[in-house]
Image (cartoon, rainbow, N blue to C red; front, side, top):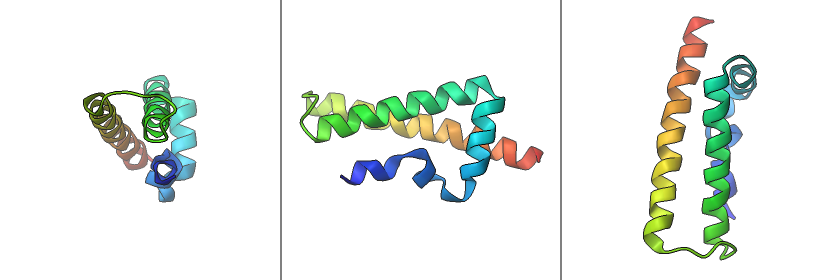
Amino acid sequence: MSEHLHTLSVEFPAYRVQLRELKASDPHAARLMEDYEEVNEQVLRAMEGLQPMEALAEVDLRKKRAQLKDQIARALAEEVNAA
């Protein structure tokens, strides 16, 4: 399923090492990443019909995933610029 392509390692392929380092060194960023993966899994389950939900609820999850990704991108940019 294409939603697997939304994992953080695929979304930020050039920064896989930095993502691991950021997760290990920054508890807030680690929590954002965990939240992202949880929301991404919920979207996947909704798309596959394993977690039935209304269309608007799925849209809200997708928006939340995008917001989390933006926050992770900012934290990652700060980490890369600090190095």
